[in-house]
Image (cartoon, rainbow, N blue to C red):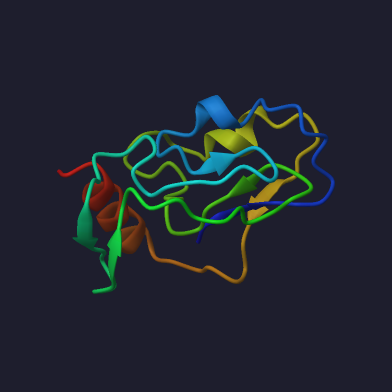
Length: 116
């Protein structure tokens, strides 16, 4: 399951540098799959979808920091718990019920993004 940042976010930015997949972005900031990963150029993700890792993507949220679900692995393979939730001063980094994933899938996403 990916993590989501709720509207209670105070935009402090504590979470952003903690993400090992660079899945967290400031509100209204564009993102790329290649940001903070080993991905580059045209690739096929774990779901078999082809995309350009270097293409600029629209922000997920224009009001508060956000997490890109396709890049979030809940820190599996890096840490025992999601680091964004561990450092969030207002507890607004919570499980995203719209993106439920098994530990195996989260680990496969991690391996894919970091070419392991």
